[in-house]
Length: 402
Length: 144
Image 1 (cartoon, one colour):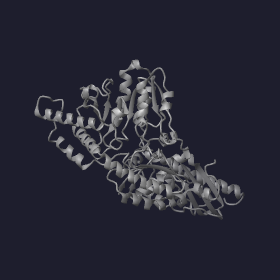
Image 2 (cartoon, helix red, strand yellow):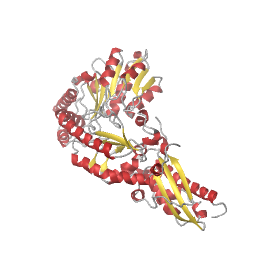
Image 3 (cartoon, helix red, strand yellow):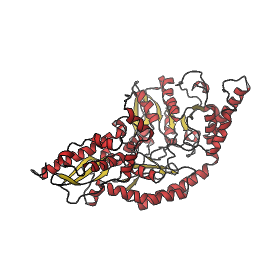
Image 4 (tube, chains in turn red, green):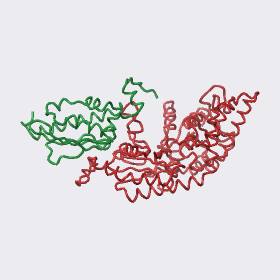
């Protein structure tokens, strides 16, 4: 089996598991129990983990808030900021291609009287900082633009947008979940006020994430209770998970150049083969500014889920931007709407159903890419033979003209 | 974001384990009657690429009986499986019998479909209904 779906999640690195193990039954104390040895040991482990995560992104330890994952971190940054800074205005600027964990809190704020301007992007999925500037209003409180897009792989010009936000004294948040552990991050270089990190996107455990919050900013706590995490996030810390995330950050930092080199090579190999060998193929996302190891595309006349199922039958696991498959367990037809990301980059609805995301990881090999390359032609040929649209095309008709 | 919690019973539980039944995967992997009929008595197109699926059905009729049937489908696994299953059900039936075929029969024969994929079976039923309509238009007075 070949796993090419690292944007959905990654396997936990065995070294991460090893680092976590002592914190289940050995050091099981509650970091808030300052008096006894168990609590002190747990507190020390928590401090060390915070230091690791902070140093992996160039932050100070006190600027890292551990959460249950990227979704909670995004909710905390967005809702937490506007609630704690009611005087800063009721207008928010966001990109149109944000993750649901950003879009959903924004929608809930919209229902509470906030106004949100969604800024579009070019055909490569790149948000133009000038467009963000044009959306600015006198009462803009916050700008949120993701660091990288999991579906099409585009890496945004966060630095430029953050510079603009700072100049106009607007809070700037970036969701870096899709960039976690693979795109090097330095919060001071980026100039962001807050940034979301995901652990399970970088070979760490699920159920843990972090929000970086620059000193001087205030957020209102979203999960209230015992006021852990400097009062920003209540609940006894998930210490094994946090230790695991910290180890994953350490490894990502230490191995950054080898991982990036490998993933760029695999990416170029697959990209070049697709570009030269598959007819009717269009890549999605930016050709240069993209997540290493990420290749996304659609093939005219072919539907995405069928392609995904056939690849899966050959033992190759990818994901599809096609809402058809991603929301297969959904409740109603609303779940089958075309991907908001593909729609935003201008892919016509009739082609959105054909998109495929191949996200490779640090343990993938060139042989695995070769295997995918050997499996693809017969799959594509088969699906073309089944497609009434391709039949029309062969007869010289335009199947999309209706 | 309140959502209605639909009680979909056994079918919903099945979809939690694996979205597609073995029967669906079998028909997706080895579609029956896939292709075209050059001298078809009727052809019907249903759906469109913007909705993510489209089916084309060809039928060949002799003495009021559907003697051959073929399909081509652009769509997800469920759409291809439903198309394939429909052709199996239809083959050998008279026009009058074929007219009574419903999407429910297609779903049942496939061992169920996830609720969000029921429209794929509706597409199959509609393709058949439209093909019969096309047949009647072209062959007034013949058939049933």
